[in-house]
Image 1 (tube, rainbow, N blue to C red):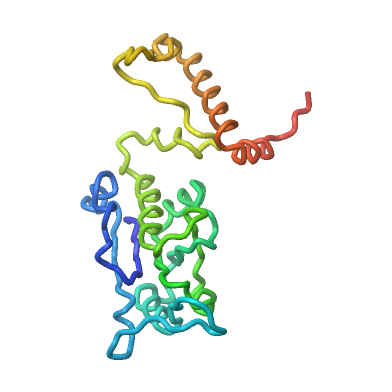
Image 2: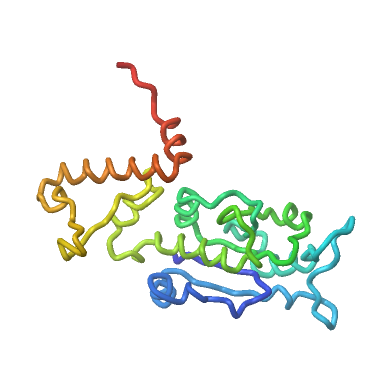
Amino acid sequence: MSFEASVLTLYPDMFPGTLGQALAGKALKSGAWSLDITQIRDFATDRHRSVDDTPAGGGAGMVLRPDILARAIDHVSPADDDRPRLLMSPRGKPLTQEMVRNLATGPGAVIVCGRFEGVDERVIGARQLTEVSIGDYVLSGGEVAAQVLLDAIVRLLPGVMGNAVSGQTESFETGLLEHPHYTRPSEWEGRTVPDVLTSGNHAKIEAWRREQAEHLTRERRPDLWQARARKKPPSHG
């Protein structure tokens, strides 16, 4: 069974976008996953197809109405749909590789792309939307974030990556950033490939890669390094 993604958006022309290219695009054409796009505005009831209104209590911007969004969600994801319902939102749970891997092992996802100042809180609770954030910044809407999420998921689906081992050694999979990479030529602009990588000694190569990954993680992402240290069992030596 392929991974089924349903995206609810006010800008359907933004899809498949990058998801139609490279690995994700090839997987989409092969049927490894499917992408269904729903225009939220189709569920408006007035002649102007309005989907938003002013925020209760006053304030700037507009808010996506709960009744209209709920109708769109119910159309795409009936009560017996076991796919998680996600809302791309800057206040959501940070997207992590662990979350991505868990989603990739499931049947798919229903993804709501927020717009305006936000989504009425009532529909978030009533339709059990899990808010997901791709970073500590604000975008114009959830469409780009949804594409980021789906790209991260699709590449982990069975058969999508040519070399399955690649997905097991990348940044975040082991709690560390990935080690540096080198290839031909052996010398370029006076810079050479480290001797250990051409030594043929696989044990030394693995040790070097591990050391480099740890160094990069300590230097660039002390938060990851500290989190990893907290997970290590205490020594009893």
